[in-house]
Image 1 (tube, rainbow, N blue to C red):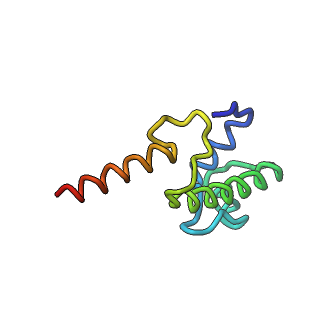
Image 2: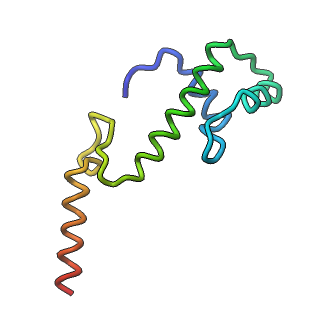
Length: 98
């Protein structure tokens, strides 16, 4: 994973919640979180958290597509598309053999 220079943003995002179900975080949700925790976000931090929430949801939705390759370059072998296809083929052959 790439180095993160603003790791506090990731910590905040995990505390707030990455998303609101099927929707990205809203300014209202972030304001409520700030009021409840006493945390004061700078405008750029708030914008970044909203953006990261949207990116998270987009990647989450795309990850349900088993034909899509993982975006993580150093992903373990079992996460790559070729490995998943091999396992599906192997399972199909096992079913045929039954």
